[in-house]
Amino acid sequence: MTRREPKTLDQLLPRVLARLAEQSGRGRALGPVWSATVGANIARHSRPHALEAGTLVITVASAEWAQTLSRQEAALREQLNTRLGPNTVSSLVFRLE
Image (cartoon, rainbow, N blue to C red):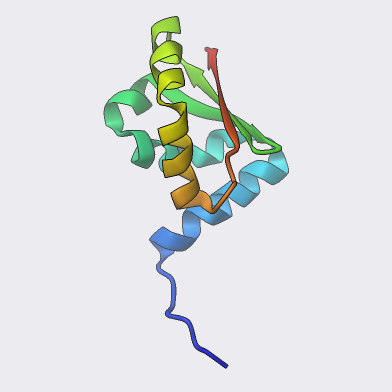
């Protein structure tokens, strides 16, 4: 039997939060992961709202933010899935608050 290296809380917590968000449908639990992924400036203007069937709904402060983040969707999904686990987020939807 091969022993794996123990995981740190920073490695485990995002996946636990993703599981909770998926089960509850509420994406707000992913706030810390979203902030760490996008940075403080973007996080001030957007936040996770719901996670259902791999679709993460992000509320944004304006249409301009929705457009900006839509252009970055592929990169954001890749970064989120690196933190949350493969294929956790299959698409991002941006909605006005």
